[in-house]
Each structure stands twice: as structure tokens, then as C-alpha cells.
Image (cartoon, rainbow, N blue to C red; front, side):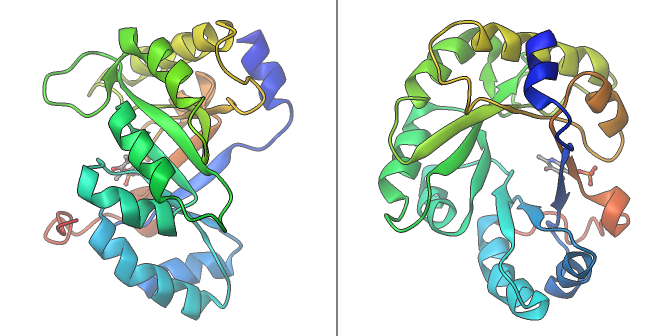
Length: 222
Ligand SMILES: *Cc1c(COP(=O)(O)O)cnc(C)c1O
């Protein structure tokens, strides 16, 4: 933590408004309050809403992809998003790199970690993370920014703590550019305070900003 704390300094924690299942008008309303960063989980839904939300908001917004990434989604993510929080294998990183348009800045990447090795959960095992980070950090047109996790149910604090320790270990490894590696993306509506106590630099909040999700809309195919 000292290096993470020093790294964060007095910078505010980044608030990413998770707008999956929310209409473009709700996004524009939050943008009118000054919110700039929005997170989406389903590519098809996002591609339809991004132009509509930006038209209503009257300005460009910063889009973060936070859902599972299959190979057939990488082109759309590379073209329309500025961050991908949910990269968990190098094959996806290489595709994002080759598909990132030349006129855009590098795509910011977080490596998603399955911290508690839960079966069936997205994310790479923590033990693979140092090598994956070292490799992804060398890929052109990407900027490896840090780590992301969705905590184990009922065990948020220990998941967040484990992610922070892993982040510190990679920071100290000397294998990556520490200037760029500045992000711990962890904490959602129910546990963001714990995440911040454990060192989050970015929190991803949906329900606490927009109200409860309508579960009938919650699995819009991506
Ligand atoms: C849905 C989602 C969130 C936001 O969850 P809330 O409980 O609505 O705050 C954050 N991160 C990811 C990856 C999500 O899928």
C-alpha cells in the first residue's frame, strides 16, 4: 500500500457509472450532472446507446467496457471504448491491439482476476497475472492500467485485499511501466466503501446511481 497510496496521491477515485440496461436518456441525465465515464457490459446494447446518449448529452462521453469479452466483440470494443476492464487472456489483448483504430489513443486495459478461483467465473487466476501483465504491457496500442475483480459473494473485503496485494506485487516486479499501472478497478453499489478502504482507484456503480435494475432487461444479449 504505501506505493499505491503514493501513486493515488490526492487524486479523486474514478467513478464509473455502470449504465447497462439503462436507456440513453438516463445516461444523458447523469452526464448533465457532470458524469463523464460510463460502463457497459453488452456490446450490441452499447453500440446502439452510445451515439444516442452522446447526442442527448451534447458531448462525447468516456466508455468503459466491463462485461465478458469474446473474440467477436473485440472490434467493436476497440473502436468505441476508451477502456476495457475485463481482459483476462492475451489472445483478447492482441485482437484489441490490432483492431484499435490508428486515430485513437491507446486503449486502456485492466486485467480481470478471478481472485478466489471460483469455478465458472470470468477472470484469470491470480497466479497467472504477473506473466500476463508483463506480456500485455508490451503490446502496442494498449495501455495496461491495472487490475479488476468482481469479489467473491459475501467475501468482498478479502477479495479486494487479495487484489490489492497482487497489484503491489506486480508493481514491484519491474516488468511493467509503473507510471501507467495506476488502477485498481473494484467495488460496486453494495461494497464500494469496502473497496475504497482496500485501495480502489476506480469504482463501478450501477444500481446506487440509477436505481435497481429491471431484471427482465438485465440479460440483453451482447
Ligand atoms: C453490473 C456491474 C457493476 C455494477 O453493479 P451494481 O451492483 O449495479 O453497482 C459493476 N461491475 C460490473 C462488472 C458489472 O457487471
